[in-house]
Length: 213
Image (cartoon, rainbow, N blue to C red):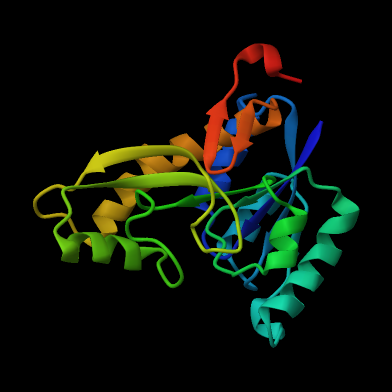
């Protein structure tokens, strides 16, 4: 059974999507072993507690550098033996050594169609405001492997939705979450746990079921 650690910073709606998928038996071969929040008091911690998942807080503001935070995060995760880290609304930048240690074992969901409206500082409602300000006609979400370049890792899945007349950042965010993020992330995690995601450079291939563990 593959141990999955979910990294969060806020409300945890994508964490909840993973918890619900696990409860429905849709993460075969994997189990959420821990939730780690970079912010004290994040509602995601309550979601973990309600689901009976061990939860930890490691405040980013307690560290002077990304490197210091990453070393502490690594030390926290080490005894949990995670085979997969999932970034579910996790707003911290991870340094090169950490990303190299967990290369092709970290998944993130971003609320746009990467490489559009992504990168450092682009998260949450900022993304959806940027989409509307630009006048884009479609947006969506992307699940990708994590590298030291923010939102720059190999793409696993993308799903698009139309930008509708009269959309607000909040309304667009809700639609992207419900129709894209909460669909794509559990699917990607399930396939990873089944050993069905193959990474070759920037190309990610979904392998047939015979490759399942």
